[in-house]
Every structure is written in C-alpha cells, then in structure tokens.
Amino acid sequence: MKTFKPAIKNLLLIAYLDLKESIRANWFIIYSLVFGGLIALFFIAGITESQVMGFSGLSRLLLMYIQVTIIILPIFILITTVRSISGDRDSHILEYMLSFPISLGQYYWGKVLGRFITVFLPVFMAMALAIVYGVFKGAEVPWEIFFLYTGLLFSMSSAFLGIAFFISSLVKSSEMALGISFFVWIFLLAFIDIALISLMLQNRINETLIISIALLNPMEIFRVSAISLFDPELTVMGPVAFYILDTIKQSTFVLISILYPLMIGILFAFFGFRIFIKKDLV
Amino acid sequence: MITTKNLSKKFGKTLSLDSVSIELNKGDAIALMGANGAGKTTLIRLIMGYYHPSAGSVLINGHNPIKNRIEILHSVSFVPQLPPPIKLSLAELISYISHSSNVEEKLIYHYANEMKFDITPNLHKSFFKLSGGMKQKFLIAISLAKESQIIIYDEPTANLDPKARDDFYRLLSTDTSQKLSLFVTHRIEEVKDIVNRQIYMDLGKVVTDERY
Image 1 (cartoon, each protein chain N blue to C red):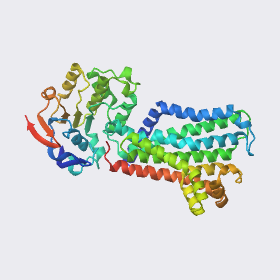
Image 2: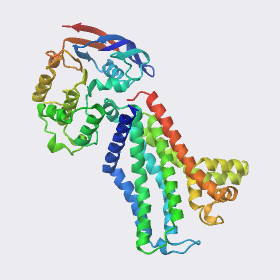
Image 3: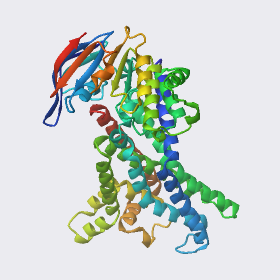
Image 4: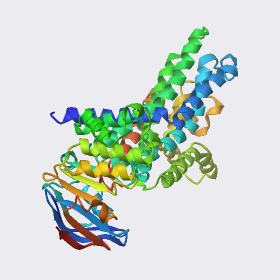
C-alpha cells in the first residue's frame, strides 16, 4: 500500500504528460478535425433529412458516422500510437526519460492511459456534438444507438490501442512499426467481407468456419454490431452480418461486440508490456 | 558502488562488451575513454539497466539495475551525449523530474542560473525548441539538482561554449569525495583537472585502468 500511491501518482503523471504532448501535436489536430469535420459534413450534406432504407434523422447520421469510423479509426489509432514506444526509443527520448526512478510499468501503462484518452475523446466528442446539435435542431435523439456506439467506440479504441502498443514494443524502429500497422489494418479490412465472400463463393470451406473467422475480426464485429439495431433483413449488411444476426441473439451479440475487442486490447497491451520489460530498452 | 563481473553484451553476432570486470568506488572521478565502438556507451547502458547483459553481472550499491531500477535510479544522474528531442515544455519536464525523483524545483533553477541559463522566460517553450547549448545546460542543471551519489555524463560538454564548460567543471569540482563521477569523453585535456582515474576501452574490453 505504501508503494501503491506513488506508483499510481507516477502512472497518472506519465499519462498526463503524454496527453498534453499529444494535444499539442499536429496529428491530434488533424485527427480531431477529421472526426469533427465528418459530423459537420454530414449535417451540411443534409444526411439527417434523407429518408433511405427506413432510417432517418440522427440515427442515419450516427450510422453513417460509425460506418466511416470503422474504416478510418483503426488506422488512425495504429499510425499515431504505434510510434509511442518505438519512436521514443529511436529518438533516445526513452533513454533519458527512463533515467529517472520511474518503473517500466508506470511508464508503459501511463502511456497507454494517456494515449487512450487522446484517441477516444475526439471520436466520442464528435458524436456527442452531433447529438447536442441534433437536440438544438429539434431532432429526436436515438439514445439506444448513441450508447451502443459509445460502447463500441470505446472497445474498438481499446483493441487497436492494445495492438499498436504491442507492435510498438515488439519492433525496434518506428518505420517498421508503421509498416506492420498498415499490414494489420489492410488484413483486417480485407477480412470484413471481401475475403470472406470469396471463400464462401469457392464453396470449399464450411460456412461455420467462415463465420468464426469473421467473428475473430474486431472490425467485423464492430461493423455488424453497429448495424444490428436496425432491420436484420437489410441487404446493405452483407452475407456475414446477415448470417451472424440470424444465428446469435442480438443482445448477446452486442455484449460480445463490446467485451471481445476490449479483451483483445487488454491482452495485446499486456503482451506488449511483457516484451517491453524483457527486451533491451534502447 | 558499481561492480561489474565478466560483463558481456552481444548484439546478434557482434560482441560489444567482452567480459569486463571493474569496480568503481565512491570518490572516483573517472574519464572513460576509447575510440567509437569501443563499448563505452554499452557499458553505461548496462549500468543504467537499459540493456540485459548477455553474460556476467552488474551491481550498483549491491543492487541489480534491472530488477531494482527505482532504488538505483534515485541515486544516479545521467546526461546523454545529445539532448533528446523531448516535446514537453520545460515546466512539464521539471514537474516530471521533481515528482518522479523528489528533486526540489528551486534547485533546478539554482543550477540553471549557475550554468547561465535563465529558465523563467523559456518555461513554457518545448524543450526541443531550445538551442543545443541551452538544452545541455538545462540537462546538466537537472543532473546536479538531483544530488545523486553517482553521476554519469556522456560527452556532456559537446554543445557547450568555453565559458559554459568552465561553469560546468567549476560546479562539478565542489565536494566530489562522496560521489562517483563517470565521464565518457574523447578529450582528456578537458577533464584532466577533475578526474582521478582514467579507463581506456577498446574492442569491448578495458585496456588500461590508471589511477592518479
């Protein structure tokens, strides 16, 4: 207990400093502008007024937002976070900062916490702003969708943050870390539907196996869960989503879609930490 | 204070440090010398606990610098050869150091003044936006304010003008009997007045170790 308080104090100090440093960085400004800009663009384009496929108003806006987020959020998190440890190692910042009596755990988890707030807050705030603006315009607020999407964004951010810290600890140079990030993103993106549909068409692999592969992919889970509140007969869903929602109870699937990516994030971050403490630091 | 026994470090097939056994004691002011690639930085990084030894051991005050890094680093000050491009402001960096190492902020200001570097007008500037000399003065001020038993300087005067070098050596020459100072340097003439021991390394080994 005697050492617990200073440990937490140091961890929060690292998180706070990382947060402050990130907020001043150019990438954070671009990151916030992209998500805030998306919401502004949707309002300007009149998305809330359109009546297509049975959903309209803020529901439609949030759905559009989440669909774009599925694609860009993972890569944003990966490329901005993956250099967190490896970049500090490259530039000898790690060598200096760790010459002070901070434990490796305090440093690593402090960085994770600071970076999580940095990546989650802009995507959440953009969505919250849409709700505030919608209320101001007199629109009906789809609270169920808002809370689901908040949970999904939280767990999705955790998953990719954990993967990014794992890569960052694993590789020595930040260039290599960036390269691996792109590969992870493209790979998971391909396995949303494109690769799975081609596997289905070939008819060589059992459907259950294809669905299991889909369920392992946090991006696929995120996508299916995001549209699960709407009519499960929708053709825009794609075959995998249709099959999943036809097989698993919607509320169970929503729970899985929040807990599973969260678990992936924690596991990868933990493996990253093990590598961080076992390898040479500089 | 620092004891290494058959300490070796390999990177792939390259042996950077080859079975080095040395003892560095309180009151020692050491010039650690050698050509590039001699193993000086590797030795320092093993002492600081940045590297895991491939063989042998390193102990600081009887502690392992990897397993007991917090205890060890409370008693060690380190200034790198090149100031890293830290994006934190000076105020944030001072806060990090004072909280993590229990260093009094006024001591950092005091030693910065002694080094002719005025922190106040630069307090909210990013560290990496300072000039090379200012960065080095600030890092030296921090290292002195920490009042550590062991100070490790890797070419600390590389970015300093002659006047600042004089200030630095003047500050170091006060009360060295209770400390262990380790200077990595290529210019013995610069430190010859403040060191009492000279270790020369080559190809990962200690070639000569002279006391005077």
